[in-house]
Amino acid sequence: MKESGWQLEHSYADLPDVFYKETKPETAEFPEIVLFNWNLAKSLGLDPRNLQLESSEVFSGNRIPDGGLPIAQAYAGHQFGNFTMLGDGRAILLGEQVAPDGRRVDIQLKGAGRTVFSRMGDGRSPLGPMLREYIISEAMHALNIPSTRALALVTTGEAVSRERMLPGAVLTRVAASHLRVGTFEYAARLEDKSHIRTLADYAIERHYPEIEGENKYLQFFNAVIDRQAALISRWQLVGFIHGVMNTDNMTISGETIDYGPCAFMDAYDPETAFSSIDVNKRYRYRNQPGIAQWNLARLAETLLPLIHDDKEEAVGIAQASLGDFGKQYNMYWQSGMREKIGLVDAEEADDSLADELLDLMHQYKADFTKTFRMLSLDALEDMPLYAVEAFKDWYERWQKRLESQSISVEAAYERMRSVNPAVIPRNHLVEEALDSAVEKGDFSKASKLIEVLSNPYDDGHDKMFKEPPEDEERVHMTFCGT
Ligand code: AMP
Ligand code: MG
Image (cartoon, rainbow, N blue to C red; front, side, top):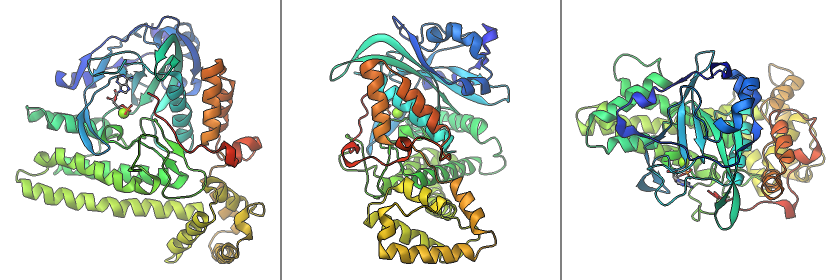
């Protein structure tokens, strides 16, 4: 139905057929739409009023929208350091919606049933993890962090068997694309050596069309490095811990993808990890930049034959690029950190000023988000940190530094308030919303939380959304639950 606004194309399905498998979603018995992202729908050219009539059918996978071609994508990946062949085991790509502004985005149904890549899995997803992805991916977007988006959430009316029976759900995910480092790892292992070049050309055209001229593939690699360095710095600057930074969960576009056991840290501690399956804390907060670089090395390995005919030359070139990841990451992190503490003109001592603050926050277990917000409001009196002598000393030096700038102290505070959120998807709030939806079928808490998080730099929200958890509310571990 054209009136709904679907403009689906399939550039990915034009790739050689080793890259995907046509697949039909399994039908859902009693699909019910429980969340719908009106603003996102509009920006994609979808007409929400007409869509509504068909929404639960389309967003459950029961009915393929006009022009849709359901496929499962093939990919591989290093999971916790070990290589595995994977693929969409519980996700089905309907096509690429071409928005009125020309933007092309993947429309994917997550939890819509088995595919040839499902291995032992059932292709389904319980409601909890899909709602979690909806809430956190939308919160990330509102924080100006590149991320896949959530368009719709449908409950299937069917139970999914996990440690117990749970309500099933399908999430409609919108992404710049689902090309992953793992897609390249897959292509590189195919017998036909032309596939890696085909895939790289496709990725360049889709995500880096500005690349032209010599050393196209090296430029491509450098561009991915840059986007990932920027992305990971944004995670670090808000205390986001992804939890499963496997190479199949790292995009070529530079968007955050696959919200499993991810979480925002409360008290600042670089060793923080939440995921129950990350037993060695491989993906702890502090490790995220290093892991990103490790993942990019896996991408580099797949591109070597395209970078230079001579393998050793190629390795040297790729290593030099990879070495720049750290420099770029630090540049993004440092400029982000300066913004967080209101410094506009860079000075040599700024980095140590920021580091000292973080050290104090660590030592006194200060809440990451609230500390920066309270600094931005110059309203620290209620925070325990304010009573600490060493902090007072830091604060005085910081004030002097603010006063010495080319902009007024008030203007510096205002800038700080535009980068230090007042609200984040705190784990205890997310868990509470999930619990209410899963156990009682009540989505009011989730809806309210989504609304609050869409406006993260506003102080007007109810206190319960801004405050760190009480000790007994604190979440120490998160689960994939897939
Ligand atoms: P993820 O944890 O979402 O990154 O998924 C890792 C791999 O496991 C991907 O290949 C998924 O498609 C697959 N997978 C996860 N859950 C299921 C499921 N319920 N059924 C089939 N495959 C799954
Ligand atoms: Mg994944």
